[in-house]
Length: 412
Image 1 (cartoon, rainbow, N blue to C red):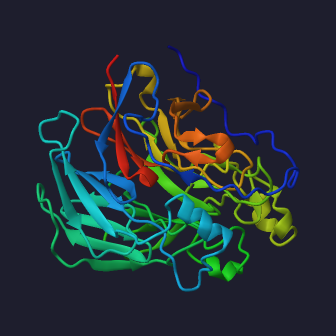
Image 2 (image 1 turned 90 degrees about the horizontal axis):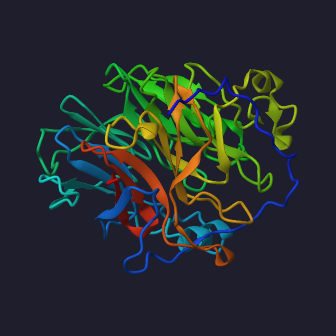
Image 3 (image 1 turned 180 degrees about the vertical axis):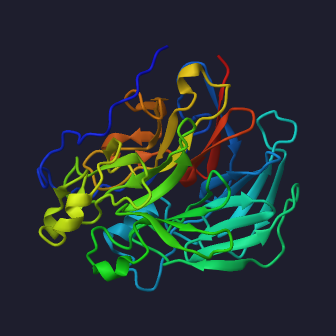
C-alpha cells in the first residue's frame, strides 16, 4: 500500500463562532455489561488486561516489560460548588471523587496477555499522571510538581521517599490538572506538559504563567525553559519515528459552539506559539479576546491535524512495532476521552492516523470504538485515555471511567 504524506497544514473549514449554542452535555458512565468490550477492526482482538483499578489514566512500560499505571482523578476542593454543572458532570462521568493517588505495577512474565502479578508500586502521591524512566531514576509528574525515585529493574514496589525537583502550578480548568512527562530522544532533556488554568484566560493571563505549555528541563530539574506555548491543554506527547519530531495532542477551548474549536495533534516547534488564548488554527481570533494581542495572533502556528471538536483528545502514541499490519506501522493512535460541550457526544474512541514521510498520509479513522452506550441519553460504557505499546507489539488503552485496561492485539 502506497501512502503519500499530506502537505503542510492548512486551516480546515470552520464555522463562525456561536453558529450553534454552547451545549452542556455531560456523559453518564454506566459501565460495560458482562462480556461486552470495545470494538476494533477485523483481525484485532480486544481483551481486558486489568480490571478493578481506580481510574487508571496513563502508562509507562519499563525495560523489563512491567507496566506502570497511574491512578488518579479530579478531587473536590472546598472552593467547588457541589451543585455546579461542572461538578455534577464530573460525578456522572466518574471523573470526580477520592483520588487513589497511586501507581500500580502489572507484570505479564509469561507473555500470555494477562498479567499474573499486580502490585501497588508507589503511593503517597498527589494526582500522579505521567511517568518516565531515565537510567535508574523514575520520574513521576504530580499535578503540583515532578518527583524522582530510585528504581532498580525488577522491583515491584518503591518504598523510598521521593525528591521534588520541579514545582508546577497545580490544578486547572476541568481536568487540566494532568501533567505528562517524557524523556527526550537523546536522554539529555525532559519535557513536561502543563494545561491551562482556565478556558480562555478568564481569570487573567497572569494566572497562566508556565501553563498551556510544554516545559523543558534538565534531568535534575534545572534549566527550565518554555519549549512551546499557546497549547491550551497538551497531554499526549511522543516523537514521530521517521523524523524524530515532537508531536502532542491538545484539547482546545470551549463555549464557541458545537464545531469550535477542534482538538488537534501537531508537531511541536521549539519556541513555537500555537494561539491560545488569543487565536485558534493560526490567526483566527477568539472573539472573547479580540484586539488584546494582535502580535501573538499574527505569530500563531496552524496545527497539523484537526481531530474533532470537544473530543478531549488525550492519549497520543506512534506505533513502533511490527505485529500490526503494515498500514499501522509508524502511525499515530489518539485516545479521545470525550467532552461535554457538544449537543451530541463526540470522542469516546481511539482514532488512528496513518503517517508517511513524517506527516499524516490519510484521514483519521476509528480504531477502537463502541464506548457510547446510548447517544440519546448521553450514556457511555467507558472513556479511553492513555495508550502505550507493549514489547510484544500489542497496545494497551486505559479506560479510566470503567476502571479497566484493554489490550488490543492483532490475530489476523
